[in-house]
Amino acid sequence: MKPWYERLFENYAAKYDGECFVQGTSGECDFIEREIRHDRTARILDVGCGTGRHAIELAVRGYSVVGVDLSGSQLKRAGEKAAGKNLAVDFRRLDARDLPFSSEFDLIIMLCEGAFPLMETDEMNYRILENARNALKPGGKLIFTTLSGLFPLFHSVKDFLDAQSAEGSAVSAEITFDLMTFRNHSKTVFEDDSGNKQELECNERCYVPCEITWLLGTLGFRKVDIFGAKLGAFSRNDRLTTEDFEMLVIAEKGGPAPEERT
Image (tube, rainbow, N blue to C red; front, side):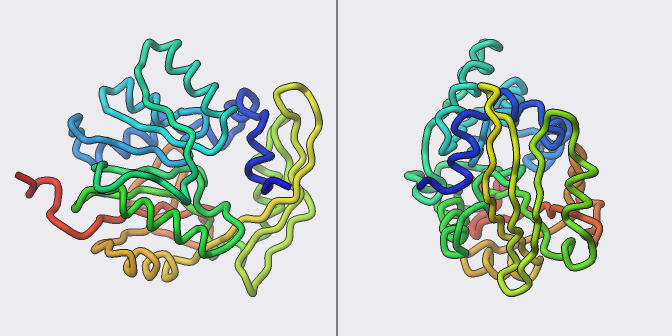
C-alpha cells in the first residue's frame, strides 16, 4: 500500500488550495526575496512544491524556479495555474529522497511540510536534507519549515488543529504524540476533489532545534538559524517559543557566500 502522504495527494489539489494553512503565500515570498536580497539571477528549487503556490508567485516576481513534487495530481494543477498566468515554470515529478541535482541552485525552499518531515523514517528525512545540500551551490541557502517538537510538550495538538480548521477542510482526529519517537499520529478525514470522503492514518515527525542544527551541521551547512514560523509572515524577529507549531529554518551551505562569487 502507498504511504499516507502519497494517498492524500492522489486527488486532493483543488481542495488543498482552499486550506487555511496555504493562504500565506505572498508574505512568505516577501521573506524569501529578502533572504536572497531580491537577486533575480538566483535559481530556485521548490521541493514538495504541491500546487505550485510559492513557485508560481516567485515566477510572477521574475525568478527562475524549478518545482518538484511526488504527486502527479498536485503538479497537474500547478501547471494549469502557471499556464493561466502565462508563466513558464519548470515543474517535475520527482521524489525528494532521490533528486538528480548537483550544485545547481542558489536557493532551495521546502515550505508547509513540503516533503520533510513526512517520511516514515528519520533516515528518509535525512536523505531529503542531504539531497537539498547536494542540489545547492556552495554558499547557497536552504529555507524550510518543519513541525516543532517543543509545541506538543506544552500544548494539545488536537486543540490547535481544531482551532485552525474551517468548514470543508481536512480534519485531524485521534491524535497522539509519541515521546519516544517525537511523531504525531492521527487520523485525517477529508473530502477529495471528486467529493469522496477519505480517511488516512497519518504519521509526521516533529523536531527540536538542536536536532535540526546537528543534522544540518553533519551535512556541511555552516550557519543554521531557527525561528518561529508565522503563517504568511516569516521573520527573523520571531524567536522560537513553545507557542510555535512550526519552526522556520534558514541554513547556508559551506563555501563562498553569494556575494563572494566571481
